[in-house]
Length: 231
Image 1 (cartoon, one colour):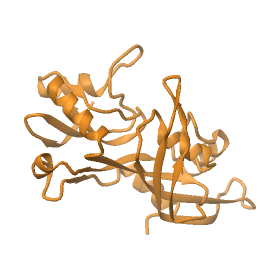
Image 2: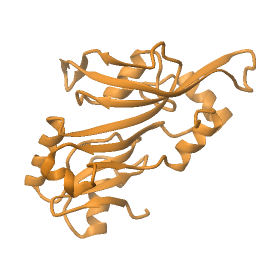
Image 3: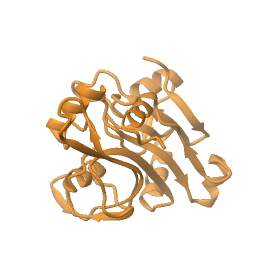
Image 4: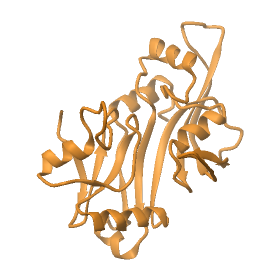
């Protein structure tokens, strides 16, 4: 596979741009993963700091040592490092911003889960060729996690009946099949787009404003254009 893009590196961490379809850690039936591929690329052992689903692309923090991994895991847990996601969803939202405060089962235990959302753009009554009489709504969202439960964004949006496009686990199977056939949208439309470091001692090392942001990958851009959400 192609080399992983390193967005930032210092003595403690490497921040990379993880492509969709690549698992973060190896395991049973996992042929390639970030920890193995980045270790080959850099010649050093990799310690993932947080997780991204295999089908979620975007910014991922990896550490160079167990102590650095612990430090950065704690920074993310204490909200001194915040992650911001963008997602393309089916449906529309009554409010331009808000939050989901719905408990989720995480590792067998029910835990509080909070996700903040903001509507970046939306399109209503879009016709697809398969059924011209049926109209569809789509939204591009900015999402920020207050808590970090497994599959939190995907679950919250699915529960809201605004599932992420091409989410094969929590999404709408019928609609996913339709957009794949009509629009060629096959990859899950969820991206870890922005990382903001608010810890003063670490912020200055990342960027002047402590912010790292990646552009949309090509497949995401194509989906935005096809759905007229790119304005």
